[in-house]
Amino acid sequence: MDDLYDHVQRLRTERRRKSALPPGVLEALAEGAMQADAAVRGAANVLTFGLADKLAAGADAVAKGGPLSQLPQRYAAEAREEADRNRYDAEHRRVAQTAGQVGGTVLGFAAVPGSTAGSAARLAGAAPITLREGASILGAGAATGVGAQAVGDMALYQRSSPGDYAGAALGGMAGAAAVPFVGAGRAGAIDGAVTSAAQDVFNGRPISVQDAGSNAVVGRAGARVAEKAALNELGKLSGNGKGRLGESLGPLRSLADWQPRDLSVRPGTRDPIPNDPRRRYWIPDGWRGERRFEDKFGPSADLSPNQRLARAGLDPTEFQLNHFLPKDVVAIFSRPISAVGAQASSRKDGNRQ
Image (tube, rainbow, N blue to C red; front, side, top):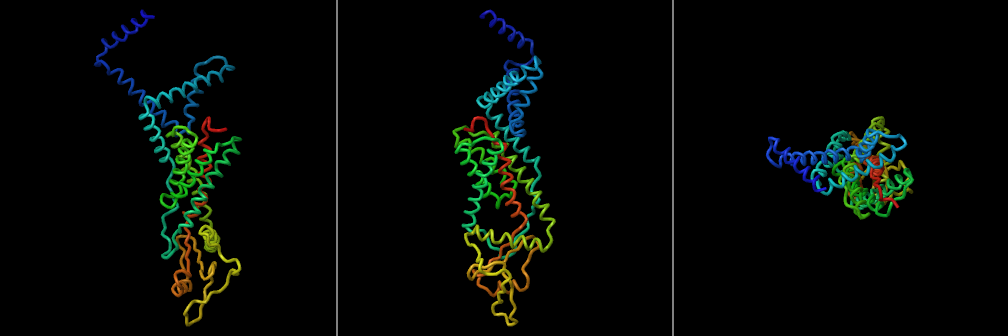
């Protein structure tokens, strides 16, 4: 054994002597290549949602040849080798691996088109979101995350741990809270990334940048698909259809504000315009005690002349204008779809009971 070691050392020394490069340069070049390989592998696994290792293992198992009946065994051996390489990279080339995973996430984001929901302004005087509505939105986000986790379990015939459900709820809340500030697409990405990281923490695992990145890309893509479908349907609505949509969303907002509307007031009930010498009237979309609601939808929506007179004559606490935009509808429909997509991509080995 010592003779073999000495022989290998002599060969290495002779190779260095024949090389024009200074001592240590070959080793540095080799390590640089391995660092680059770790980065590329990290990016590939994010972009393929972890399938790159499996594809590489399958290709190597086929390329090595041998009886077809032994292919599953060869694949299992190659898959273990890929996993060992990832673990080695995580221990010895962590910076390069993480840089590749972050780069893969950025590339995945670039591959998904941005939002087209627009940034139209709401009507002047439109009611802002209240603290009660904010609490309802967070609760709905948590429920969406838990529901998405349950759907994923049923689809894959698996059972999630309590930590998985807690992480899904936290991710759903983070995504819901982010919608008003960053839009549905980026909120879907935040949902996916936070869900993955939180599930790792709650299940006692190290946080996986690769899984968080993959979930972020899938969450953004799912939100974009939902946005495109929602905008396509909204584009088909007539003026009357948009009016009815606003009138349908209004009561839902009142419920989110913990202020349900009076059902005892018949739709179409006339309300006299205060202090109007011509004794004109308007028809509120809803009532709650002395408060009247006017619900609008669309960038081109506006108050009618009589509605303006009513708002001017009423106390500010007696007139609430709700103005909904396409981005609001996109947010409502994109949250469940992006959450389910992120859950489908976050199935980690070993986290199911």
